[in-house]
Amino acid sequence: MVYPVGDNPQGVALADVNGDTRPDLVVTCSYASSVNVLLSQLDGTFAPALSYAIGSFPIRVTLADVNEDGLPDILAALQWNGGIAVMLNSSTAPGAFLPPTILFTQGNPRSLAVGDIDRDGHLDIVGLNLNGGTVGVLLNSAAAPGMFPATATTYATGGNNAVGVALGDVNGDGWLDLVVCGGSTGKIGVLLNQAAPAGTFAPVVSYGSGASYPQDLAVGDVNADGRADIVVAGGNDARVGVLLNSTTTPGVFPAMATTYATGAQAAYSVELGDMNGDRQVDIVTGSYVINSISSTVGVLVNSAAAPGIFPAGFRHFASGGLSAHDVALNDADGDGRLDIATVNYSSSTVAVLRNTGTFLPATPSRRPVEVSLFPNPARTTVTVRLDETAPRQGLQLVLVDATGRTTNHKPVSGTNGELVVELKQQPAGLYLVRVEGPKGYVATQRLVIE
Image (tube, helix red, strand yellow):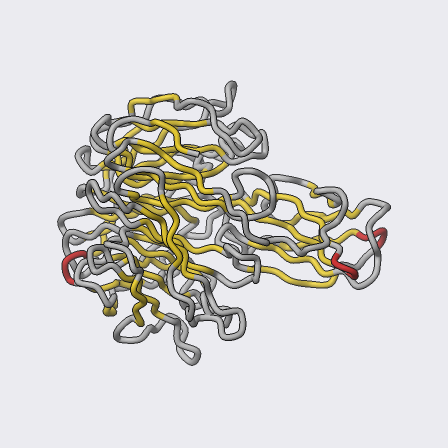
């Protein structure tokens, strides 16, 4: 399905903003200086866009609950305003948004990421500045969540004209590290979190991206060894680069990425997620080219037998418009499979490509949900409770993050089929709790970790 939005959309996010359990669409429209919100109609389709003024030339967007009221807020990088726009979700009318507050990153940010950098339980913001060769870090207030410093702390990225940034624990020490595109240097930069003082970063270490001007990146475990790897969208080089984390020295990567040709004209965005249900992380890209008549999103399927190898090559799917820019992944129609949302820059539309593959086992449980979660949203622990019809023997609990990566896996045990799961090491976000059992039994429920 394709939906009209404001002029020249570039960023897209897919998450539940109004609390009805289905993800909604949020799109930044650069030349309209607006953000469009399309609420889910609970059947995989979306209502007409509602437009909010957000600031000059918004690019990438993300959704995160920065003020801890249980509702995700909109955060967008404003390339011409020189900051990050934060639009708080309305506590009285969830899914509607308050006027923006601009947080300055000491540059012109084109990309941003959100995560708990200093491990104080509150979500922080980083903005990658297009010029100046810096990334700005804004730590959330522990005393008044949703409040940020007037001036960001900046770190050198090792290159100018940088456009992609991500957070992930690449060295396995429990602290989120920074990974950035080095722009015209063709490099990827890794800034390790120093932990002391909390929320500060070591100098950048650079690695080859396999492209002359990388445009985006994502962090996730693509070879299933428990360590976070880096995947890079190579822009006009029309390929993606994969840098596998070291098995002996976590946080160290090869000097040069292994690259895979997309078969499209370009690769300007990248997301990671399990698209075919084999529990391996696959690669999804947008092939932005101005006024291209062959605008597509590409899916590169991981090898189930040898994770980290991508033997089949990219499959391409029409974006429904011109110049597919960013992509986002989530289950838009509630069938348990990750769908793809993409924005078409030149035709000013957003498209949702519904996944028609097999994600859940062929013999799922009769009812769509047979587990209850208390509390939900949760912070430190969650109790998983099975109902009286569920089997009590041979069950396994699997916790899957938004990229499709399994982050927790353990047998279900305890009185009356209850299990208390520790969440202290899980980053905030949307997860899928899946209970698996004999004869193809599967029961799922969504969990929000704050």
